[in-house]
Each structure stands twice: as structure tokens, then as C-alpha cells.
Image: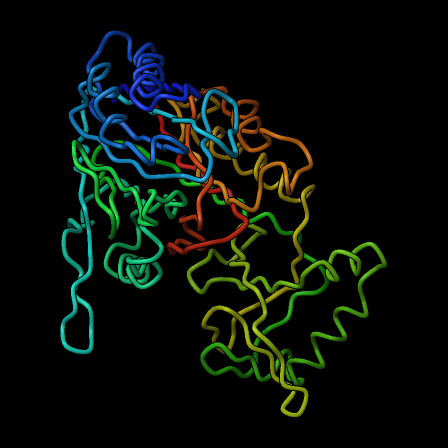
Length: 386
């Protein structure tokens, strides 16, 4: 299929004017065609007047389908606006394919929760998901999606901007929602996910030889805490300095390919350790036989990991420039992590050379080892083929 994507960014202080400005810029990338799908990421004054922002977008694009969310900061046109009023508009037109928007929410069902509004992922080419972190059980929903549709990539981010009364701002077509999740079910639109977790692998790989739930009892046949301490002692001084800034554990997901690489480690924090039992607890379920490795946050590794991942996606497209991309980057990244602004947006511009937009999320959604997860300090990208 042929896919055209355009993006626009505006920092105009008035919501309607800024939305109209950004949407008009985005329309230029559609070669005169109508917008089949629009994604909107809005910050600052747009959170107080989302209806005005929708009016401006509708005037410029009249999209057949639209979803979006409030953001702490937005990405577009190779730039990252980390604070203040800004709106980023991503528009797509395609000759074939289907974009079905939805608003999903949970309802009490006895002691459990019933999920309503989420379309069947079967036969989908991808799902874009923008949940409210306060009212939507994203991790549980992703686990279920991974079970029923393991081949469908799910990419997105948790909304990070609130309205004046403290609620979420979720946009779907002409409506504003304050809870749940909005998203798009795509069919016939090729989406390649890319997840850069922003952590450097350190030390040896260790196999879990005893575990229960989130607790690791043994690593390589030794008490887990002892094996972990030994691995840290074996690091060089520079690596040990990274660990002192925050120790993480990378876990190879069971579904990862046999020749797994850095991107197949699910990076999670340590919840604690029990010196008496020699156990450690990690912020993810673990099982006997899984391979783990020490990781630490590192800007240089985050940079190379993102660029390498994007280069691989472009290689998968035969070296051709993609139609465009969506970027969901953590609020903990940006200038605070890299020391300079516009890092992730600049990496996409360098490696893909295609229109891209997105936002700073309160949690990023993307697959590791073929399973969808919520991440932190991560940049997840949806790369769209032409």
C-alpha cells in the first residue's frame, strides 16, 4: 500500500490557533489527500481547552479517525518541547488499510474487572494505545493481548498531561474522555515496533535456577544475592560507577529468539533483597530457566541502542525511507538524561529521515521478545512502511 504521513508542531499560546497551525502543517505531507488517521499530543493551554484544539484540527484536516492525549511535553518536526503550551499533530492518508478508533474502559464485575470497548486484535496489523495511567490497568490488558494475539505489535504511551481538575485528557474523534484508554486498531497498515530501553548490559549472564513469582532464590545454583554481589565485584570501576547510579536487572523473555541480543532483555528495577534468605525481588514475574544480566541507566548506551534499533528497522524496509513514525519517549529522558534537548527526535530524523511526532509519556508501551510491556526510561517507536 501507499502511505503518506505529515506532521506539524505549534507553540502558539491559544489552543484553537495552535491546533489549526499544527494541523495545517501536517496536511502538507498528505499530497492533497484526505486524512484517514490523525494522532494528537497536546500540552499546556490545550489541556484546559481540548474542545478548541479539536475544532482547529477538524478545520484543517477533517480526519476520518482521530485519537490523542494530554502530554507533559510533545515531539514533532525534529524537536522536543518538554514544557509549556504546545501541540503536535500526526496525519496519515493511505490507499488501503483500515484505522478503527476505540475508547476502552474497565467496569467492576464482582471481585474482577470487565474490559469494554477494546476491539478484537485478531487480524490486526498493529494497535496504538494511549491509556490513562490512573484508571486503566495497562499491564494486565497488555498481558491478555499478548496471549490472544501474540503476533500483533502494540505500541503507545501512557498519557502524562492533566486537565485543570487533575483528570486525564483523552481524545477520540470529536470527543474528550477523562479515563480509560483510547487507541487505534490498524489493519493492512505495516507497523514495525522499536523499543530502546536506555540501559547498558553489564557483567555475565546468569541463569535463574530457583524462583517464585517476583522473587529469585538462586542464580546459577547459588543464592541469588550472593551471585549478584559477585557479579558486581567483577565489574570494572567505570561499570561499577554506573551501577551505583541505579542497579537494574535485564530478563530474557521466554518468547525471545534463541540468539537473543540486548533488545530482548526486559529491563526492570530491583524491589529489594533478603540477606538472611539470600533472595532478591525484581519488578517482573520470573521463572526457572530464564537468563538475567545486570543493567544500568546510561545515556551513551541509550543513544546507540535507539540508533541501532532504528537502523535495523530501515534495513528491514530494504533501506528505503519509511513513510513516517510515532515516538513515545519517557518523561525521564529528554535533556535531563542526555544533557541536551531534542535527542530522541533528532535520532529519528537522522536514522529514518521521515516525518515523526509523539510525546513524553508516563510509561511507554512496546514489545520485548514478542510480548507487549509497559516500560520506563524507554523510547518506543512505531515505524510505518510506505
